[in-house]
Amino acid sequence: QVQLVASGGGLVQAGGSLRLSCAPSGRTFSTYTMGWFRQAPGKEREFVAAISRYGDTTYYADSVKGRFTISRDSAKNTVYLQMNSLKPEDTAVYYCAARGATMVSTLPYEYGYWGQGTQVTVSS
Image 1 (cartoon, rainbow, N blue to C red):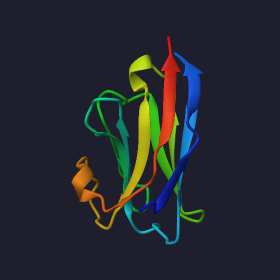
Image 2 (cartoon, helix red, strand yellow):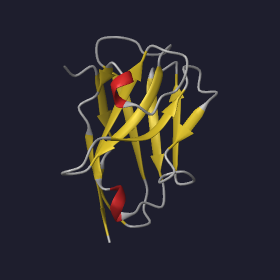
Image 3 (cartoon, rainbow, N blue to C red):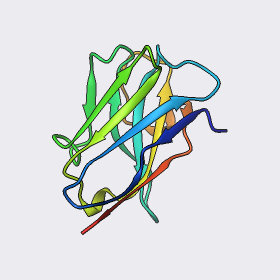
C-alpha cells in the first residue's frame, strides 16, 4: 500500500543534481523518523540517509556522504533528499520510508511505511 509519495526523480548527467521530495498520503509523519533507500536492478534495497523526528540528527551511507543531504519541513510534512555530484552508480529507484521510533535506523525492516519510489538515472 502506498502511504508516502516520492517525486523529483529524472535523468541527469554525471555531476548534476536532483532534489527528491516525499509527501504523506492519508496521514501525518511529522513525529516519525524518516529515511531514504534505493534499489538498483538485480540488487538489494540499500540505505541512503535518515533523519530524526525534529531534524536534529541525520545519518548517511558512506557512499553518499558529502554529496547528499536529507532534510524535513514539519509544517509541510515533507522530507527531502538533495543529491549533488551525482554518479552513474547512484542510478536506482529511490524510496522514502517512515518509522515510529526516536532513533534513526539503516535497516529497511524497521520502517513500517513506504512510498512507491521514484526513478533516478545518471548518465556518464
